[in-house]
Length: 196
Image (tube, rainbow, N blue to C red; front, side, top):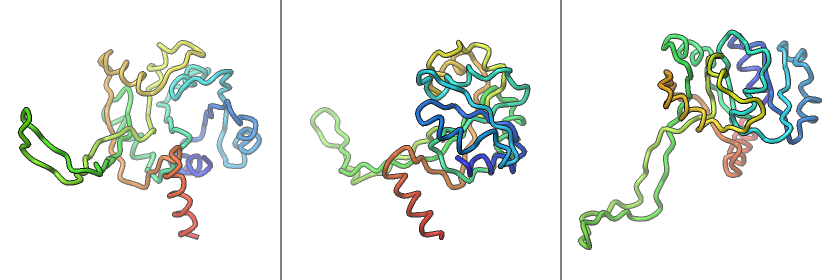
């Protein structure tokens, strides 16, 4: 989390909100008010888990500038300045950082017409654009939030799309890894040890 704060600070982001629940005291004790990192940190105290978007309802007062939101389990070297500029240049209500993700099917994939086999594709790799867990949100998007009501980002994004908000995607090519998955955490640890 510290590296994300420093990276964003280098992109001229100086006010941070950290949502805390489980182990919140440890996080607060480590970061304090942010002065050691030359930033300001406020904590959004979740009395119960609010999901990935729900803590936005606890921001008070709502800032006037776009809100950069990064999931806590993401490690990245994204250029936050480029993301923020993209958001503003596209007049977006919300920008979702996207990442290409490959899924390898470990079997031959059969295509059939009734009982007749038409083809087989041996162990194909399918490519998908996925949410990278990094978002820029215009403050007006928080108007519809109900305080302390759980909400996840996919629901928030779907609602914005349904309401015909300008939701745009920003592809990232820089280093990105979701350490919320055990195998990815192990991979990040190996990379860190390799770079020492």
